[in-house]
Length: 155
Ligand SMILES: [Zn+2]
Image (cartoon, rainbow, N blue to C red; front, top):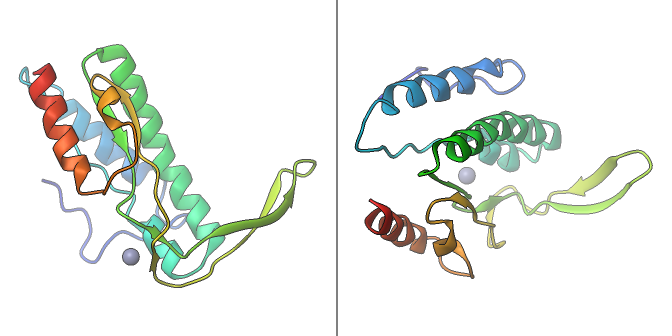
């Protein structure tokens, strides 16, 4: 376990993008040595904060930071051949909707509808060994069962 801040890390961009990268890289380095495999959960928790604050710029910066680690996890899984990567959220925050924009400028216009968690259905993306278990529509509590099934099936 690594506790890296007294009260949570600063938000992007004050917090450097290296913050999550260093933690992720160190976790892979240490856990990757385990011949029995490992389970690693990485949370981009401030994506939720940005939704509560209804701050689009903050949200985009946090998602981009998180996306860098997802990319690394996918490359690790592709190279390793026996890794499952699951990317999801426990809920949506802010009720964000794209209400306009232009493909010419590449800019989107979005609006928040709440400062709270919403009931919007969130996607579950799965890649790698066992990803076939993550199709369909289900309660988020089912993700635990499906990860457990994947571990039993491919272990
Ligand atoms: Zn929240």
